[in-house]
Image (tube, rainbow, N blue to C red; front, side, top):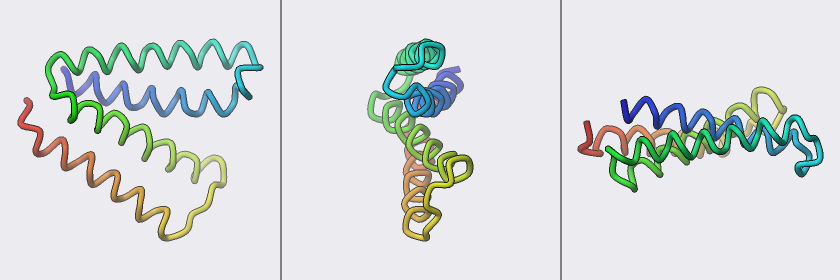
Length: 107
């Protein structure tokens, strides 16, 4: 269940990153409220995962999901740069996340 919480926390991190973009500096009330709710949910889910997973593993995977996911969705939906080095770096993040999962020693 910890891994499920951690993946959901990472997805929420992607959501609040996009929320920050669309809240325009917290000047749009509705988007800002949803963004803060998703932020809190992300932290709560991360804290639940950390009850059973090592700190470094949980935090590394959480930030990796958020960073890689946000970058990929930025490329797909926001027309952000698609150059080779950017995609290569995203793949490095994903590789690191998978490595942390595989070698975490947690069940």
